Image 1 (tube, rainbow, N blue to C red):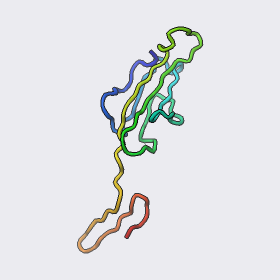
Image 2: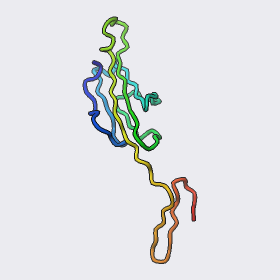
Image 3: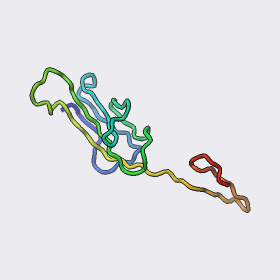
Image 4: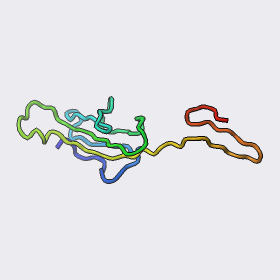
Length: 118
């Protein structure tokens, strides 16, 4: 198999989790990370940071495909490829108006979209 080890896949992980794999040989094994079955641009290293991508709130599937693309093997090609899948959860950011009262004075805070609302 192309991978010696990887982060455990059980359960739903927070989107702040750093996902990782350990290839048998980093110089030979090709890696490609996917978000919901779409290749993540430039994600070909041993680690993947879901927080670096603008993911919508909710669960997402993160998958890495590790493969040895050698031309020397002609049988048992499935042994040259390994997929590992995790489920992560992106928590929605708070939105809406937030007002903080100090005595009789109200302080208007900015909305997430950076527009003044009062």
